[in-house]
Length: 217
Image (tube, rainbow, N blue to C red; front, side):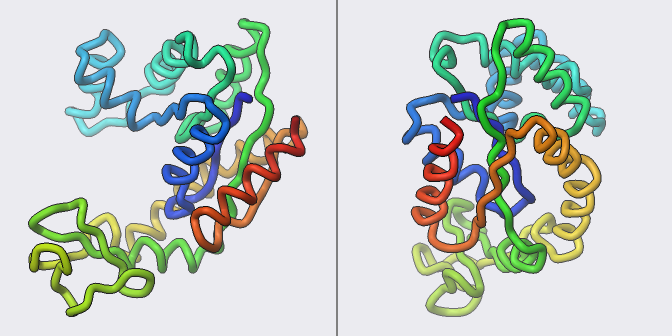
């Protein structure tokens, strides 16, 4: 299957993408991973992306699209793929359609993870990270430390990242509504969108997604 995964920040896209890709035996293609791989390998696209990032500018769509096209052309993606973080806007969605059409392919489904806005803010703004080890992550509601502000694992101080503040999260949601949400309507017009609730335990959401995708076969 060829799938695009969409949803607001805090919807759990990365987690669900990994589970779904494994269950469907297709590669999980994340724009974040593509950027890191191209930059670390020093590819031409990676150098272009880095020059924009170093200047504090947005990476142009054509660079992102070029990375995605190269990745989707690899042998392990012949049976399908799951795109996470791409397309991010209407222009990228149209370019993806054109790219797939040129290869005689189409998307099978666009999985929309739905989460109420207040829940998104609660999920992200409640995160606390250990200063000693950023892999030690807690949440004031869902996974609180035994002692407030102290990491259970190493005793380090817990803090809230600047980009996890409620103000920043709401700004990220505004960007999502303005730039990414329009692609849902775009794909809905093609009959590709499957919307599921992303509330509940991770495995429950995965099961919900697999069931919904099964109906697209």
